[in-house]
Amino acid sequence: MSSHDVIVLGGGCAGLSTAIASAMLGLDTLLLEAAPQLGGGTANASGFLWVGANHLHAAAGGNDTPEAVRDYLHYVAAGGADPARLQAFATQAPEALRFFIAAGIPFRLSPRIDHYGMAPGAMAGGRILDTPPIDASVLDAWADRVAVPAGPLHRLGGSEAVKLGGANSQAAWDAALVLAREAPGRRGAGAGLVTWLVGTALAHGVRLRVATPAARLVQEAGRVTGVVTAAGEVLTARRGVVLASGGYESNPELVDRFEALPGWQSMFPPGLRGDGLVMAQEIGAAVHVIGNNLSIFLGFRNPEEAPDLCRLSGTQELVAPHTMVVNRQGRRFADESFFQAVAPHLRSFDPARGERPNLPAFLIFDAQYGAGQSFAGRPPGAPIPGWVARADTLEALAVQCGIDPAGLVATAARFSADALAGQDREHHRGETPWGLSRLAPAATLGSIAQPPFHAVELHPTALASAGLLADSGARVLHVRGQPIPGLYAVGNAAARTETGAGYQTGYSLASGMTFGLIAARDMAA
Ligand SMILES: Cc1cc2nc3c(=O)[nH]c(=O)nc-3n(C[C@H](O)[C@H](O)[C@H](O)COP(=O)(O)OP(=O)(O)OC[C@H]3O[C@@H](n4cnc5c(N)ncnc54)[C@H](O)[C@@H]3O)c2cc1C
Image (tube, rainbow, N blue to C red; front, side, top):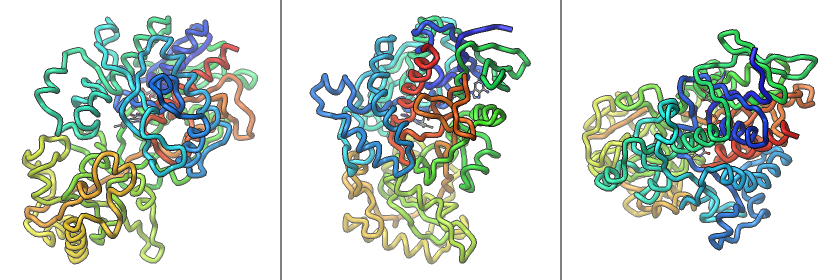
């Protein structure tokens, strides 16, 4: 039996941040990661953190205020936040940023903006941060134990990608420039952030173990005192166990139980199976579901790239001209260019027909799109792959996909006329401040008129709606309301009650870092 002050379960942003903070506060800290490599969903991320009223922005002349930050958080939360957790996140995130910079992670301002430009307190910059690319060789023997997803984003870095033309438009980047900036060990975006975190954890004496899933919590006289690994090893934690094991997005049973979104595909690694949720429920922890979760996206699996991973389409194909999204009736149902406008419609239910009118949904595009834009990360103009449905008429395409042919033809005609006039009268595509920050509305519009026509079924994918109910001190709450002594939940293992229903790039990673510090301080106190 080995004994430590703190045991952290999960090697993503939340777990590594907690472990770094615990070690820096003088606690003997062990981190267990179930997978053979560290990184979790964090490695897949673009690597942006959202921290309102931060000191880097202030030093650069920014005029953000705590009041504006709270206004913005309240708006985005759409009624789904716990005021105490929201307040803790708003006030402690800037503090956590300073703490982790002092720990050795060189966070910097990124050119990205707030999603909801229309919200009170929104800022057009200064709140999103990321880390510069890093060479994996700094990790020595640990270099191969960090997951690195496919694609240039994780070699270049998030802010670098934005400057090349957008983190989500990699196919449009200047290939020569990308090549010039690449180096064999270079890690950027989520993989880069994990590399920074692992290097910092090792430097501060955190003990890291991979391929060691925790299976069960040990409780003595009501207090969590350790864990049992899947191999049966008992590990003792004198100050606390921190669940940083992510969500359950890759566990179909839990997805069915909590999400009710048919056709769900996971955008996260297969190890995200809700282990923390299950282990904590076994000892009476409360689970909380964020109602009307807006962190839902549409995407599809690319069999040539990562056949098990849902590739997000909402910020790529869906904002490009000559594309639209329709339901089985062949009708559009939202502004495709603003994914949070799409999300609520995916949950619609029609009791008269006994069906969800907007699932499945289909991405429709024509030859003009294929000629000028990037599909599934391929270079613009590359042939559309054979696994995509194709037909010379919209009617034939509709029949192939089980879409109402008359509906699809009528929708394409209306959408094309609007596109030519430069305004989507039906759903106002591209007119939100978020859309406008990247493209003028007319630039997201284009007629769907030139054969061949293509269709891809789109699947809902999301940050899970449910997680452990934790208080503003990151302590897991029992179903009867009191904290379970010795048990903490951070990152996606906890319900997002600090940010609620809405989604803003960077909330998730910043929350993991912030509540990681809060938990570490509580355990050290
Ligand atoms: C394409 C994409 C881009 C994104 N971009 C951003 C972004 O820019 N900014 C942002 O804030 N969010 C972003 N996100 C969301 C973000 O990736 C996640 O919300 C975040 O990484 C969650 O961090 P975490 O530490 O809670 O969990 P994870 O990073 O998922 O880590 C959890 C870890 O726990 C491990 N684990 C599971 N069970 C056990 C067990 N029993 N024992 C031990 N270990 C276990 C898992 O293997 C995993 O490594 C993005 C997501 C995607 C898919």
